[in-house]
Amino acid sequence: MRASAAGENQREAVCLVCEQEKKEGIFLFGHFLCLDCNKAIVQTDPDDPNYSFYVQQLRKMFISKIYS
Image (cartoon, helix red, strand yellow):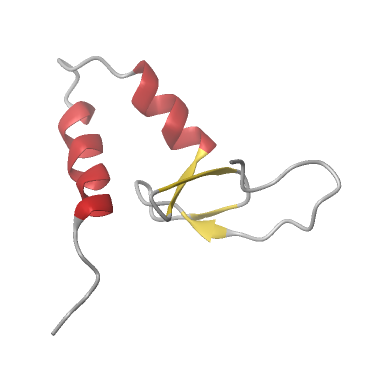
């Protein structure tokens, strides 16, 4: 599911990885991932120093937001 398409009202959402407001991207498990970060993640080798950063940021998807 894309967050925006031609002719739709575009709203900005905060990207899970870069933490910036963007208009285009996808929602995964209720979290927004901008197209720029999505592309960077797909093209990053596991040996790249940025790889661990992406993994750390994506782990936020699985942290419970329910606080007691």
